[in-house]
Structure formats: C-alpha cells, structure tokens
Length: 125
Image (cartoon, rainbow, N blue to C red; front, side):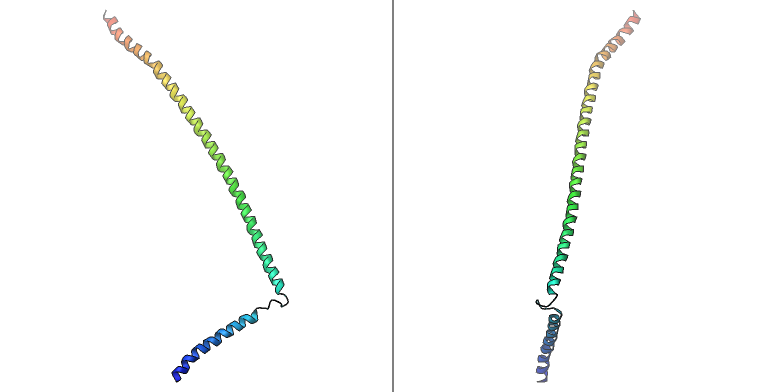
C-alpha cells in the first residue's frame, strides 16, 4: 500500500502546486469593480490608440516616399525614352547622309577609273 499512497501523493502535490499558482494569479488580478480598474482599461486603450496613430503616421510617411519615388522613376523613364528616340533619329539621319555620300561617290569613282584607263592610252599616243 505504500506504493499506492506514493502514486496518489504525486498528483495531489501537483494539484496543490497548480491551485497555489492559480490562487496567486487570482489575487494579483483585481476584480472588475475594484477602484482603478477602469483607469487601467482607459490607459491601455490610450496606449493602443497612440500606437495606432504612430503606425498611421509612419504609413503616411512611407506612402509619401513611395509616391515621390514613383514620380522620380516616371521622370527618369520619360527622359530615357526621349534620349532613345533622339539617338534613334540621329542614327537615321547619319545613315541617310552616309548613304547619299556613297551614291554621289560612285559616279566619281567610276569617272576616275575611266580617266585612269584613258591616261595610259593618251600617253602612248
């Protein structure tokens, strides 16, 4: 029976420990109608409201920052697009001009070839 008594004592000591812990928790908490409990609730609510307002202010700052960054990126993209269009137009003008030079150089090259062929014959004669 000694072993049976030891087994029943273990749950009793555990139960007493738990009861003691619960009682100490209950004693530390004030009942709802105790003086000052409504002040704690108001203080807790005020703290929560202050935290929420602080977070809202931080979100507004973040929103303003993101909007200004979005505007900056739009301006950069517009500048880049204008630069790319200008560069493309410049390349087109250069290509057209070089094309005209090639066309105008071809008759001159052909004329110099003909003159080159004619000179040796003129010197012979």
